[in-house]
Image 1: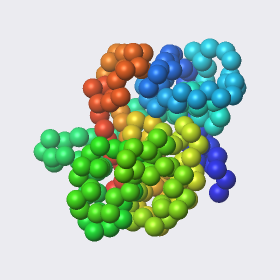
Image 2: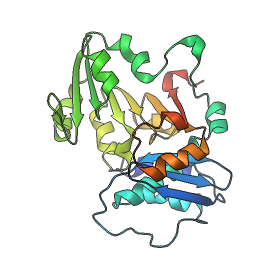
Image 3: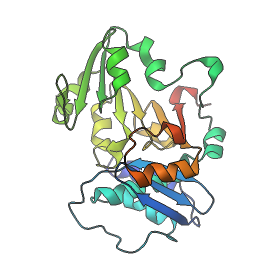
Image 4: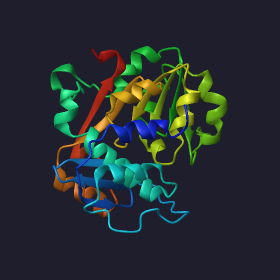
Length: 254
């Protein structure tokens, strides 16, 4: 497979004819809205090292054309492309029809870290990205490795991925790796592990299972106006107030 194959698979799954109604390229979160009232989020990367490939307004642009910018090496532009992809795949009605699991108070806590905790006991587990819950609940039960672009004490730099990921039994990958283009290589390195993609940047797209992913722990926007404020203000790291954290697992597919 070629590195951009995973992006092309996502883009090809979008229909032609949908238009971009609005977008916000915020400090922390980037948002895209379609003319059918769907919203997508992606983590913003503040690293515009090269000029954007599209210099005009994105409003009115065909959604597939905007989604193609997910392949851009201008990372703020790539975040808009990923938000466009998620505006299609992560719309609530489509996600429910696909069998995506939404939070259910009757089943208790169902986030990915809770679901995989029992499988992790005594195993090697890594997170690409620093997740407070993972460090709190996984360290007592397994050999946990945390890899980060800006490592804190006790964490590995992300350059250690090449060395450490092939040794793991379970790996949690931040969806923001789609934006910075590290996702294709990370998935190659995780071929021997159960691999879970995490966060609002993750498309709830079943075709990702063809690339070695076992579980998609993504996000569905349910509060559009709050989502706009989240992207526009640029101060809130957690998107929880504007939607639902959901899951789609390969093992749950018919």
